[in-house]
Length: 138
Picture 1 (spheres, rainbow, N blue to C red):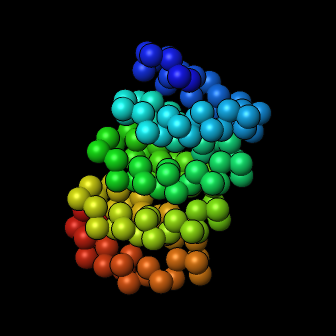
Picture 2: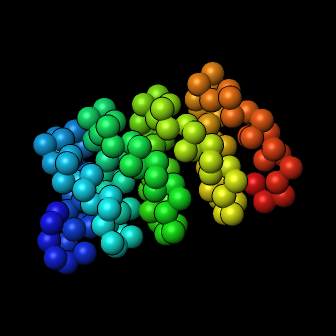
């Protein structure tokens, strides 16, 4: 996971993610790849952390930061990881709600969906979600 080659780092994250909770001993190394300079590695790290279950909860804030990543693949992987963590994402609903104003309609749509999955915990964001009803793209 610390290889010089980005393809190897990405493949390592992908392989560890496929093992789910069995890869928890490598959680720190995977989370460290969230700061990788290569988008494919960051995306693979998000996906792997999404598969690691409750043990990855301390890293959800770092994953939420990638909702605004410049790379679409990384943003999509961050959405997926947060979605897999369900209620554990509640402390990060603010970061999710910020994406309701994103330039990318797909990002705004994903934010609406993810906020919709959190019921009462997301009620403070309902006005912002309702504003998306006027959005011609979402």
